[in-house]
Image (cartoon, rainbow, N blue to C red; front, side, top):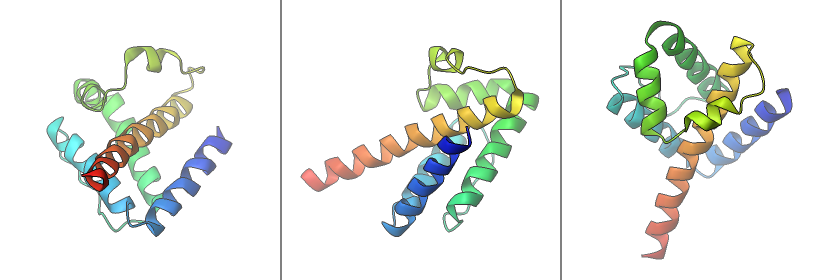
Length: 120
């Protein structure tokens, strides 16, 4: 698990250098808001803080407002099958895996949108 998180952190640092980290955070904020979650991340936060804060939000939603958690996953298109593929039942590890899935999916949205706008 640590290697995946470390790899994700390195990717986020590269995004920051490319000034696309702000776009990723804006996308996460938009999808949280559209899912009824009233939490917004500062677009200027460091990548490691984004991972930490998003992990905390996911853990809180899973424990206290499961419906909003499910709405958020549905909005960003993380399937129940992907959740079922998580190879552990440890709550902390599950939350970490889901956080990484969210970051990956949200990054795909940002990347595709930027790629398409460059081609136009």
